Image 1 (cartoon, rainbow, N blue to C red):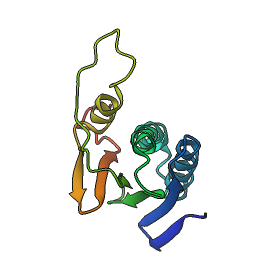
Image 2: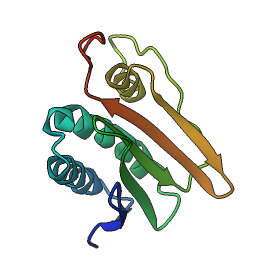
Image 3: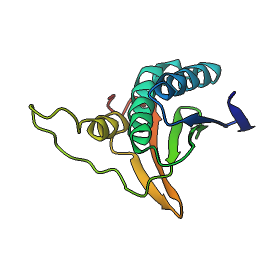
Length: 140
């Protein structure tokens, strides 16, 4: 299914709960950020959307999840993934032997803590914001 553009600053894509959806979400983010001239955010944004879509795909709660990329201003974007699971993500410190649990910690680091989740009547939306650092702001 092709992405839907609801306005000049928002694009969305419905994806099935499958592992292949991660690569489709990465392509959406890469193409949209390039179209907006925000190439410097592509690498971090692809990592963030990969983690959020991977977490949503593991739930398998609905027929499809929704991935949205929204341009907030000239240098910032918000990525949202909505799924049908009512379990909210939490930030944990995984130890060196853990096989998982590092995804949200990576999102937290890349967004400088600008992420969160909103509970919906039939699921949740996890959102993360990325921006180009200003000269007075440290980079990721």
